[in-house]
Image 1 (cartoon, rainbow, N blue to C red):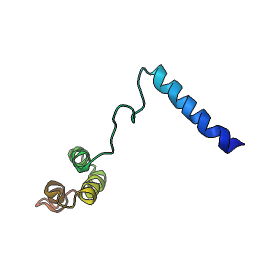
Image 2 (spheres, rainbow, N blue to C red; image 1 turned 180 degrees about the horizontal axis):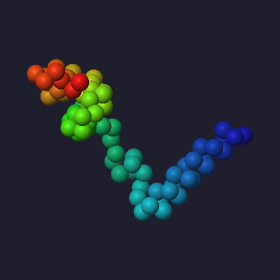
Image 3 (cartoon, helix red, strand yellow; image 1 turned 45 degrees about the horizontal axis):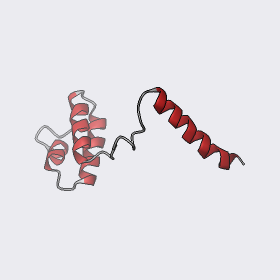
Length: 84
């Protein structure tokens, strides 16, 4: 019984939340999964904040999505020793 009721409650709660905020769901607004460029940009932000572990994670994900991402590769293997 709980399994049958729960999805309906979750959907209703989400609808209430988004309507109360004056917004629609991310999917309805055309939200899309981040691409390699988004991960690269986040990696640069982490690098500038000296969060090298975070930068490595983001650059690695950018390269996983786009193995030809030279900018992300350069940050990981650059002359300064990369992002870490």
